[in-house]
Image (cartoon, rainbow, N blue to C red; front, side):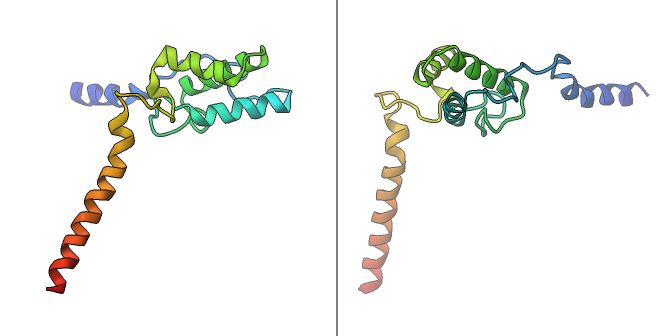
Length: 134
């Protein structure tokens, strides 16, 4: 019986992870100014959800993503430019929060790896076709 209770408690833990607080005002509500909302939406598409990891904050249903959407909308409604808001979030959460990492010596392997893999694949294919001709 104790094992069953322990198993049920472990299964219920993820359900208790979200708070019972209502979402922030601008988490799921658009800004009244269409231009500002378009700017906010474009920025939200470029920011990665820190919880979901594979989704932008615009697409995620995670509570933290809702808080980040509200923050983006609040700051843009207050008159900040999207670049400033994005830079502030990157400063706060690191380059990983952006789907556009900066090109700098530390990230060169990320940018060069696809090109290097294509070159290696082309060399292997060329080598294979040269062998077949002989």
